[in-house]
Image 1 (tube, one colour):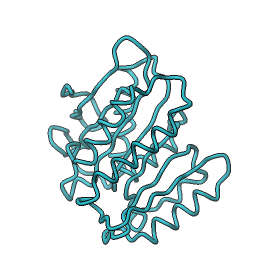
Image 2 (tube, one colour):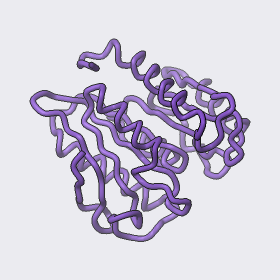
Image 3 (cartoon, rainbow, N blue to C red):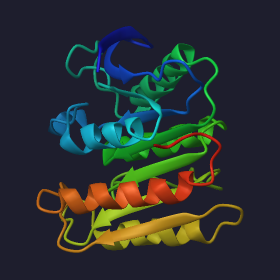
Length: 219
């Protein structure tokens, strides 16, 4: 997991990358929670998302948004962070110029940024959205949502009430030509402290189902 520093829109960005040597691979970008509440690329959920894609033959990048860790700049209410995510995907793809397939995954604030990136990058073919803050941010830009994916949420989440996420899911599931799955995890709060393993297992199960028919090795 080499540390990398690369150019972002507002200075350098710090990340961790794994690239697959010797063959074309899909790529995945992982986006962390809100910096103002301690979110960073070493968050346990972000780390396990990274490992999950790595084990399935992806080249994977997780990084710190501007103002976090060694990343330069100041927090920009999501506007600059979306630019950071776009620049990071550009940089990841430059490291794997013949990549075949692209996914994005995010947790909380990172899920909101990930879904915005999804709308701007047609090469993204799948997403994982964990605890998207549907009560805090506007998700109406998903009209229509261009790719299939999964949304996961904790039934005991007090930060983002489940009913707000359910409304978002129902809106997306009504759209044609995509499939948006929803996993509601009993007893889980916003941080999945006691249900972390359950969350990781459900991510694994979903990816195994989605990737089983793909033309690259997921072993």
